[in-house]
Length: 418
Ligand code: ADE
Image (cartoon, rainbow, N blue to C red):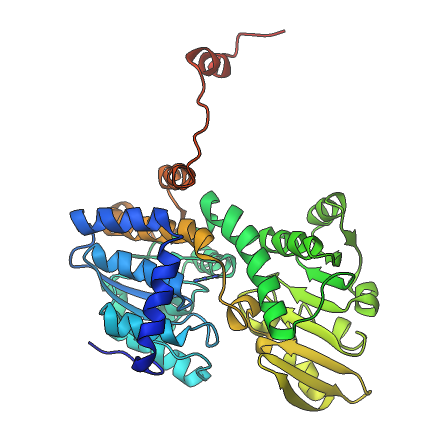
């Protein structure tokens, strides 16, 4: 079995981490047990490009239990947990190609190593694997039954491929599942982003002016949690509807030119590029902290910083301080990459439980139903989504009410009036 990890000797720590995460992933564990018995993925080859964390490890283990041959590479050069990668390779027989801090060439070499396993199902978080298939490894397309995509940014890229008629196989957009984005994007990104900022800087959030750029599900989560820590949260949006929502949720909403003057911490989660660009970087106060939790590092205009600074030094792990020509200092966290995975450990297992339950069941769905699927981006089937919600609730020991027959009839009746 091939693999490329930092150091196999880290595996004992990795195994403990994987087991620790598993204890908080009851839905995925249930799926794994079911997969072990029924082997729905017998003979399948799965290639995954996901953040190599202890939670992803449990997903890979579940797929393997279902009979799949799994190979895994990182979906971001900075998000790999090296001890987890070592344990996956050594203890679980999974072909992992991932090293934290790998350079761009290694990142793409690792994607190619996964593709060399000739996957029938591709799994992405950000669409780099599928983009490589479509641009450089087209010979693999005839064997691919379908793929899954984990994140908003990836789904946007894939929908654009579908619209332009270039998507070559069906995709299940896991991000679109309610049991994914309502929880992972909001509570997962909310908590793990604050965790990443605090681990990197150890700053006090209470009383800080904390600017959140983007008020999607992730931005909502970050704003909510930053407020919970006592920060004064300012939201920037380009969508009038979301801007009103942020205002009515009790946050200050303003234009970037105003926020640039007052913000002390800036955090982007938009999925777009140069969101924190000259508009903010040219004006923000001395010693501002700037981070990103969107999928790509393009959200912060690092080129602007490079051009307008006299130098950059590492002042703490995951903090690079740019000395600007005008005398100010600007601190960039985790090289502008996802701060929650670069400087912390990503979302907690409990929330990834639902996201990865969707992934596991979507892979099974593709394997079983690919002949019925077209070259389109599909939502996760509603039954899968609802079933995961029910299983998660049950795992929390919560039972809820159901409609009585009379209530059901009432809801279905149109004749009844005042
Ligand atoms: N994305 C965000 N958090 C994650 C985690 N803990 N594992 C895998 N992917 C993630």
